[in-house]
Length: 415
Image (cartoon, rainbow, N blue to C red; front, top):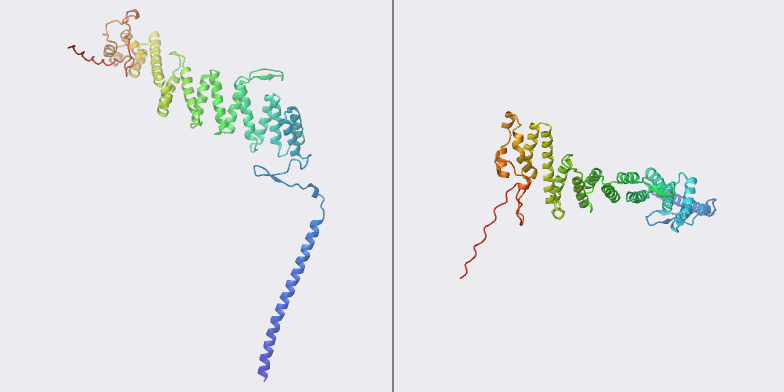
């Protein structure tokens, strides 16, 4: 009997413990619910209390470039709204008012994030009034101090347009009156800076070509050739690279002043022409690259002949013969080589015996190229026979005997 009572008592204790645990959990949940409700009520009451800055809140809008900005009419006295008023004045054509508003804004807000835009607006207002030289100062301040601004490229474009106008003849104002001062130096400086500040861009490409064309128009052939060469190296895929290559060749040829001057430009022009023939045969044929190469060939030979003649006048036959030797070896088909072989017997007679033994076989060359014996005097100009008329032979160079013409077919006899 006692065992049954003990078993029932232990069972009752288990039920009591389970009930107590459930009751405790219910009490805890109820308490948490009451606390949560209290917190929500407090937050709702707190949100309904007006704060001092509630009237200054602004609803931001998403701009076209995915940036949150305040509407223009949010606060008429804000720096952004004031700057917008200056911009609208410039759009309406009132450049003087736009300049005054932008200048005043810059004085009142020296550290505002919109300062770069204000500088651009002020410079644009001066540019609209025809005072582009003073506008360059504000463009330069923007470019130097705010290279990360979204108007950095715009300022460079403005400077490029001013430099382009200066390079094409626009003059600076004299004491803000009439245009009298030359602006070539300013044009060159700006065009170089644009290429340095935005390398590899389309704007830098335009500035490079404009600078090269400026030197070409001014007949500064050395700087023009350097500028065109730099353009070809920096922008090999540009649409204007063909123009740059041709202008480079023309400037190198034009820089050669004659046999008495430096001939380095001729060698460079010859190399550039051969490069053009390999890269663009159609353009090379269109500009007559073969004729230009022949011209360079003759000019280089004339340079050696003039140097030999100078040494001969200085009573230095050894040096003179050295240049003649180089001439007949390197340019055997040139007119200059033929002229040198005409007079070689007189120069050969002045050479020491030891030097004369090491010279080329001028006697054979004279006979093959001129048809003259060593002791035979060259004919004077009035004794020369006129050149035969007719179509020129292919593969014939000066000093080269053209191939004999094919015999005429026999005429059939009449029946």
